[in-house]
Length: 99
Image (tube, rainbow, N blue to C red):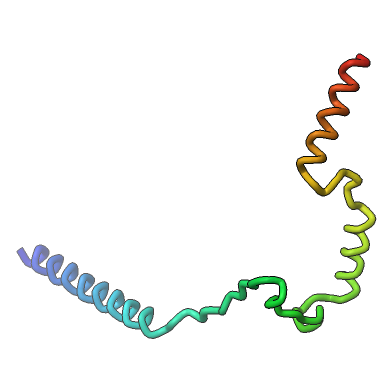
């Protein structure tokens, strides 16, 4: 019988400790608020914020390098997707007739 009582007391103490730890965590979680960062969503063209690369934490040299790379590797296809679609379709039809 003594063993059963000791086991019951041990379980009760563990339960009390777990409830206490859970309560402390719950209170702590309520008091610590996450830092919410304001997200910027631009409006029309006239409302866009303008920053220099350094202000945004961007290396200006690498930005210029990326822009130059993008311009030099730009697609020769039309930017209008509808025109590009019909041009590629016409090209496919012409090569299919040759083969």
